[in-house]
Image (tube, rainbow, N blue to C red; front, side, top):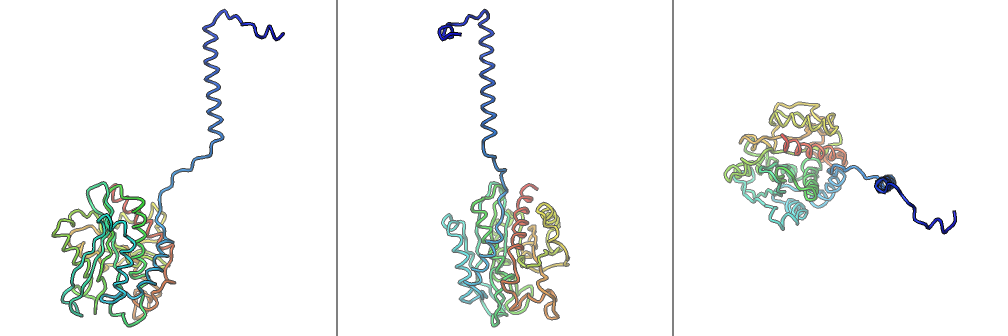
Length: 334
């Protein structure tokens, strides 16, 4: 074939077939191009579920204990503890979602005592509230020994702060979530119905009067959940359906081995004032803390100088965080 003949127009007896063939060829080329681009494109990672950060909660515990190692009521350390908590929620405070509930506990064994609950709110998209709570002070009768309460109040305060960090970047899509740092959980002389739970007794009564209580779908309490040997107790003072939900949450998160090794007929803790007013409650607590002694059968670290940072772990805080987030999800879909 010469160059001249190559340039001559080609005759076609069936131009309609030629058009169809060109269309098919074009379609084939486009398909091949898409296939090549798909094959060479970087693989897309599957979306991951956001997680609570147990290591960050542990670091916050260290910082909290350094800022306020002794936090008993009416002490400079108690004031420092409040300041530490509030400093972590400047963004919420600017939106009006940090509330300081100040009150005076009258007729205590040491007289009238000013106390303060701190509430941080994360608005959701459904009508209702899930409360996550922990006390932040240390035991008053132990004020004269080197008691820092790393597990008993310290780690759970840090746990709620880190939960706030999570909720700030992953706002609730269901019920609103409120963090409650409650004051005066510990007895001021000796545990009794009147000498304990000052902050939650006050707040349950207050929220009963202003209508907040009726909106609470669940009250989830964190207490002593950073123990290295973590196993959350089966508390018969907690609401049965929430106890069952914890079993489901543990199964879903792979933490079934970390719950219900022991059952207690009724743990007295900050959930009781709400339970007594009909609110569904769940106490997530590991009361067995350290080897038992005659003086401390519930564990030799509890309410002693041995409740220190080396007795707790980021892994336990991670387990607790996984369980709390799954509980929130399950409550929302219940």
